[in-house]
Image 1 (tube, rainbow, N blue to C red):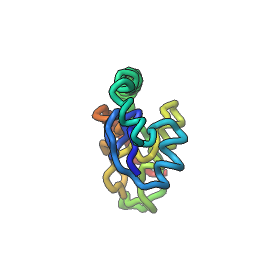
Image 2: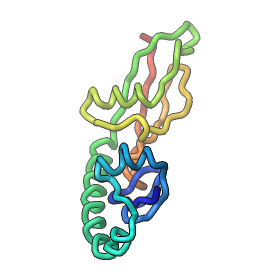
Image 3: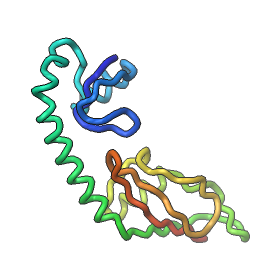
Length: 146
């Protein structure tokens, strides 16, 4: 289904672009959450007049994302996990775990916005949080023995 994005979405496109996505994703998520509209003939014709409105909304979201990036600049997360004597974890650190830890300190970041390498041992690691479009933040994460 062709849609017009009302805001920039990670891995899909930028605000104001006409993109093609799966019908279920458009009908069940993007359109009901007002992140996109159907790219029919009428909406394509009015796109030029709506682009100012879309850009203004996008600028507000970018400003909020920059503010969130600044607040996350010097965050260092400490996570205690079960491990053996050599420091190998019984499990691994995944984006959902990091998202939950960030929520505990007041930063609501969805797990899909967190880029993390495969962490299976104790130590200090760097992770990337993609906040919005090209705005991202680097965090230090310290994994220690529980």
